[in-house]
Amino acid sequence: MSALLLSLMLASRPTVAVEVHPDPFVDAGDHARLTAMRGWLVRRLLEEGYDVAAEPRGAQGVVRVRAVPDGLVVSAEGRARRSFAVEPGPDAVQRLEVLHRAIQGVEQACDAEDAIAEPEPGVALRFVDAPADDGLLEAMAEVGHHAGFTLSARPSSVDTLVCIERRGALAEVGIGPAADDCSPPQLVVELGDGSPDASRRAARQLLDALRSPPEPAGELDLEALGGPSGRELLDAPAPSVTRERDEELPPMHGPPRAEARLGASAGVAMRGRFVDPLVQAGWRMGRLEGVGGRLSASAVPSSGHSVLVVDLRLVIGPDWGLRVGRRGHLDVAALVGTDLHTFGVGDRTAGDVAFAAELPVTYSIELRNWTRLHLIVDPGIGSSSWEHRVGLVRESGVDWRRPAWRVGLAVGITHGWRIE
Image (tube, rainbow, N blue to C red; front, top):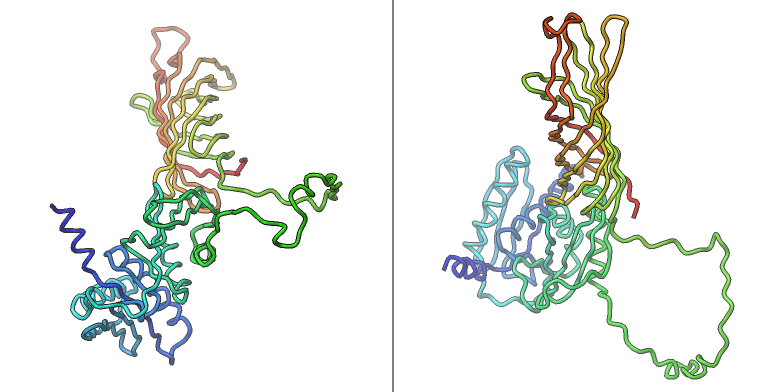
């Protein structure tokens, strides 16, 4: 019942157009601020269930945001007209007030039953297995202002559906009728680092694809075009084609599927009631989402009253990675290797070796350009516990002791390179 009520509420919302009018007597910074505000407002109206047309003639109402010396004026015009003043303030607060007044004005002045003078083709963006890319939606609203498309919050069967599946800094894009749900990927768009400029470039690529969608390939009648018949082509000898090395066509790259990644981190290692410093470095190679291999090295320094200890660990093994949301990554590994327990008392140094195993879990957030900030929880165990006493006899007091198990907690940075 609640789903039916929600669908009826969304279906009754009018299509609106959004215009901004900067103050002509202020600097260009205010123009840029209002242009960015328009993209933000369009995105938020889409989230509220309103379709947003590029031009007023394609809408049932118009929302206008006009800059004045003492703030902003938000007006909504449809069957009636409503205007609201928005006082100056922090940009985030002012935007929320503009959104509130815009929705209030549309509800009071516009009617979804009114006819649209010149309906525009509807386009809806869907992000596959990921949250919506706010920057790309706002860029679509900005660069598509004069493209003649209505951005649809609730696409109908006759609208065009753009399905975007992010693959690192690239995205696979399928374009087709909304009635057919997501179409197979037809092009690859570079999303870049998520900056406003990169989002605008990606939005322009999407608009170009919407203006000239790929047409299905058909049979080419060479004879109708004045060329040779198919039989003549079959009977003709194969041409000899040579190409200089420096004229070879560059390879085409799709979304990245595998990577090599180098990282370093620092934190603490908890061994029983003792907490010691932990330094780690690692190398990973494998699929972005799936199986890979990892090599990890770590050092844990500690000390007693008369002994200095450094525990070194080198482990290797498989791991499994998967994407979490738009920028998150989760990796789980099973590693085995060796512990090298080194210690020094005065001028004397010695060491011992034991078997080691770890099950690290890593959560990372992509910052930009294949660089990630990561948090590691690293439980591990060795085949031996370690103990050092003050004297040479067993009855002497214990100077230093650690159990065989430990739990590491570290924060660090990794950087990766595409290898496939």
